[in-house]
Image 1: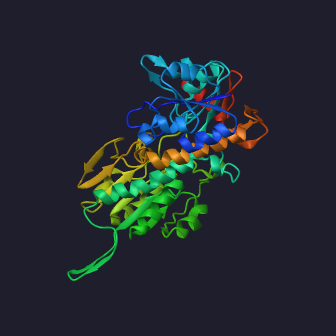
Image 2: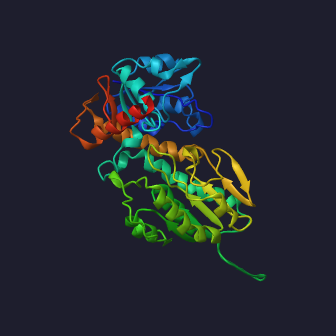
Image 3: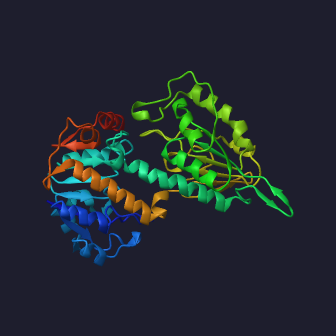
Length: 383
């Protein structure tokens, strides 16, 4: 079977789906690997490195997409030079990528109509067996780390306590909202930089995880069930959201830095910080909103922009993992390598839909949309 490593063409996207090390492992597994010209340049890998690893370099993207059996990519298929990358896929081909299936179910329907077998990386289950394939977590880990560096660079004071001849400087106070993978890494990074850290999550079950990385857990009594299937945060009602906003306002007002990571798959990000709460913060304070792309946890956030509101800087970064492309590509490549090895036997795909990983991640097969949540999202889109 031929595996394609496609070049990413989105603005600012420097990651690549496979690095030379993982390509060599795929070749040893019996696959023929084609890599699009320049696919790894943004992550520090030239074409010669892929050739040394055993790959064939392909200049024509239509040939690469159309003549291979499995296409590996970071971002969903897009339009390129007036062509849709989906149109290049041959019926029966397999696509493995981030696909945003709940946010863009129409794309999933297109893949089904094209008779493509598609695996959405976002839907890899949170389980011990699937941990090595969980690219959503590996990329979120880096986003959490980088969010703290952005905050530290923008904050007009230092993070750690410092004792000098001129006196003692107290440590910065950091508040992290959302204790998923990104939030926990943000806590750990802020602690390593010397800040005093507090954190909140609507799931009380994560309290011990928050404390284990050095933060104080903020508890707000919520009567509503807040944990969804797979351990993710659940979308809660408007009354509960208002209770959370009120409960957090005093903590936000005291913080030098607030990092927000709260997101619900397929839904707009929950509003946690109102304009009134931002106005209560100290001048020079910083908010880094990792949910800016899905609507933002802060009312003042704008995706891809730095905004100043009442002397507070609100940063709404887009695609933070792509700003650390060497490490995120290495991690993502290993995630995909492990998934391909899970799906393939003796160099051929052998899909077992009784297997939890295969069944969860496969969104299209045999011309049909398989995932029930995607089907529901399609019904909403179609009215």
